Image (cartoon, rainbow, N blue to C red; front, side):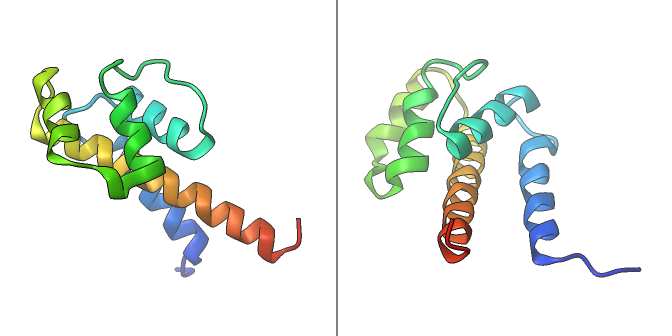
Length: 107
């Protein structure tokens, strides 16, 4: 069996966090990933999650208990919030990784 490259493993991990069984629907997680990776679209993401997703993907150092409480008060469970955070963090990391590669390659 051929060994997977780091790129393949990274993409496989992204597919896993997006489509593995969870509390948030797969389509919502796909849209969160797309928003965090590409910075556009919020179709299918509950409106109350959008600011949290943006905070995780753009300024995660600013997440406070109040940020989480706002999403909890909107009716989301701890599991849903965790899943949204993981997918948004993956998308943001993927965006930054691709940018670093473009810079490294001089594009």
